[in-house]
Amino acid sequence: MTARSETNQKQQNGFANTRAATGNYYQILGVAPTASPMEIRRMYRQLSKQYHPDTTDLPTATAKEKFQQLNEAYATLSNPQRRLAYDRQLYAQRLASIYAAMAEKEPPVERGDSAYIDPIDRPLSGGELFSLFLLGTTILACLLLAIVVGLTQQETTTESLESLALVLGPGFCL
Image 1 (cartoon, helix red, strand yellow):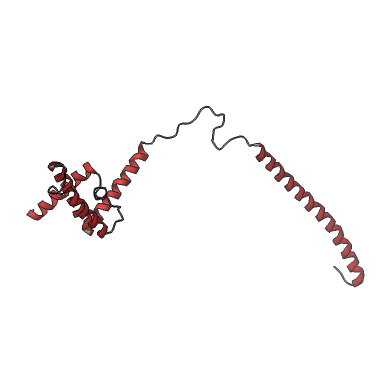
Image 2 (cartoon, helix red, strand yellow; image 1 turned 60 degrees about the vertical axis):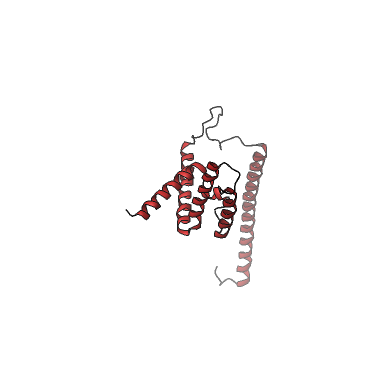
């Protein structure tokens, strides 16, 4: 293993440990995950001036730790390939936490105080009963009207055929 790969491995392990303790790099820099490289750079410069051990009023140990976190966050988010890998890792962590929350969720408790088996199965309200009554009455009235029209049309059709036969003459057959 080369010295460079060992250094990269140590940096990645250090980044993971820092991230677990302090939150994600976007929160450390105070930018949104959709922030542009210029916005990330601007916030890094602003915060590095604020937390640099030589220019801050914070205790040296605290300032040094915050400044290291800023440097790690900026090193990851300023590099497009590392940022993409980091975003994928955050996405995977979010999915894992969602699935874990879904697995921990208890199934709904069946309520035993209802006489109805299904929560959808319930008595109809007065308005719903009235609507069903009107619907049934309308269907029945339409059916009766169709029967009456059919019977009167049949009588009319028979009478018109007889008169047509008289007009056309006895040799014409229908």
